[in-house]
Length: 312
Image (cartoon, rainbow, N blue to C red; front, side, top):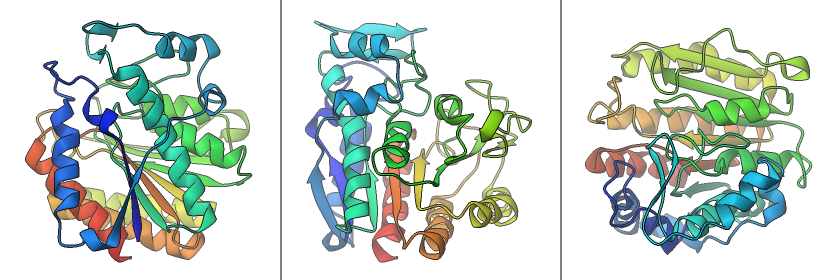
């Protein structure tokens, strides 16, 4: 069985507010997963809120308290006009952060070997003290830090295939040799980070792998980068769990992307990472939703992605 960590709050963040990162994204994903050919291979688990201490292991205390204490009647802009909070956002963010930790714990306990968290708000742009790029708390970084902290793992890999570079995740783990951060992303593109020369600092040098790709990159290019660079990097690192920042905005139909990936490529990338997980960490693989803004392409791609997790 594959765990699906959901919560009604993920569909209430920004509900009724006109935004490309809309609540309709969550509804499209959940409707597809509840009515797909492999639904009997999925177990739907209601997400629990994160404890404050696991969030402040990644984010500054003052920033966390500021988000959690927001009192919102309508909508509040948190960062440069594109990161917005509405009345249910603080609780949604708390549950989004909690979902990844909850799923990671369940994977370690053997309840599942794979899990997908269709969380909103997304997370990989969120920095230690700043909301950014639709993201409030860095959900995947919180899960990875819990794994290398309380859970005691020495090697966790984060593979980020969102079309936008995960500047927040990179910055949080830039000097940490326990986390291998790998990102394929369109460059130059928002947020303008992710140059190939950024490889980590201090003890973390060599544990950041940025793969900036030009607009128009297609299935063949992504396949080449996985086979030539990402899978060898995972083999060298030998992760004890693989986490995926699963953005689906590299799809050819996505309005925020210049990439040209097919739906099937998301299944193929998932399969390659599932194979690496089988090789190195007993199949344990955890995926968290990031971007993906064409509703049809998003639902199709999530189905392709989770379908591989459920059959592995």
